[in-house]
Amino acid sequence: MDRKIKVILSGGGTGGHIFPAVAIAEEIKKRFPQAEFLFIGANGKMEMEKLPQLGYAIEGLDIRGFNRGNLLSNLSLPVKLYKSLQKASRLVKDFKPDFAVGTGGFASGPALYAATRLGIPTFIQEQNAHAGVTNKILSTSASLIFTAYPDVKGFVQEKTRFFGNPIRQLILNGLIDSKEAKQKLGLDPEKLTILSVGGSLGSNTLNQAWLEHLPGIIEKDYQLIWQTGKSGYDTLVKQTPQYTTRNLQMVEFIKNMEVAYSAADVIVSRAGALAISELAVVGKPVVLVPFPFAAEDHQTANASRLVEKNAAKMVKDSAMSTDFWPALMALCENSELREEMSRNLEFFAKKNAAEAIVEEIQQKLNLEQK
Image (cartoon, rainbow, N blue to C red; front, side):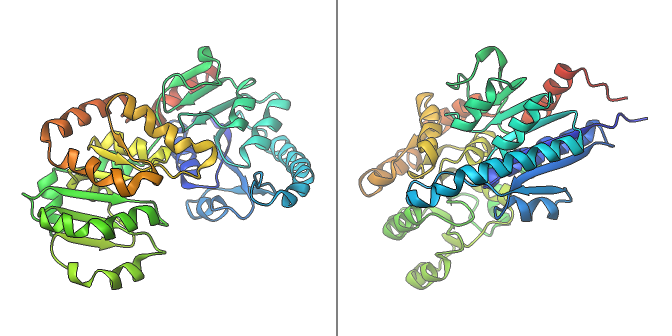
């Protein structure tokens, strides 16, 4: 008879918090097929839609973050926090989990705090190079903390494990030969190919950079797979009719990301935690352009850790007009540098993060599968 365990997972607001939680849940299900899960999220955030689509039960808390742009809107925060803590406590009491895992996001704080107060073992998975304030506070009572970078400040190192971020199985299992991938996409298998990804909503900074440098890409006879994001796609198509050549593939959203990653010789990307974890596993040289308005500027911190090991190049958002093209060409025109960066990325490539995290939790709590 399979051991029936109950697990609370809390994380959301962005895919960077949701997908690691789902990957951990999927790994737990492999080991404990009878496991029951309850996700705790924030009302109005994407997890409230995404998790039910994946077949998981979720409860929402009426919680949000501090609004630095509108200070008056924060007057209601203490009331929201109090109500969220009360509801989280009720949920934990009713569900009676064996343990709780927090992957960040607004709801993670009240959920793990409530679990701790009720004597439930808690675990934290921190995706970024700089720990968030909430996770720093929660870490003092957490059983273990799992990080995507070594030596994350703010955590007790004896309780910290550098296991990487759990990433999509599709990426782990779907990478193919580069030339084969280019052919699948209708590209020339012999030409250097650049992949630009700016997230599902796209990046205006990257889109404007490609508008400026498309003539240079075409002149050098490179190929560009340009994921524009939803918001800018229609406008960009109208702005680039002269570039509808085989060398340019402009798409709103890339469905088969594993094929696009495989086809790329050089990648240009924002520096979100999950994006970097996937890029490390893919092992292609990359130019990172951190989103400057991310909380506590964590994207710059993420990118900097790779730059320190010569595993990536970084261009600041404010310096795109002067630094982007030279950084890109430094990679495109130097195959030895590309190979060196690919090797250096292996340090950050944690292909079995979900397995390692669940294994450690299992050992910590002496959970037997049978």
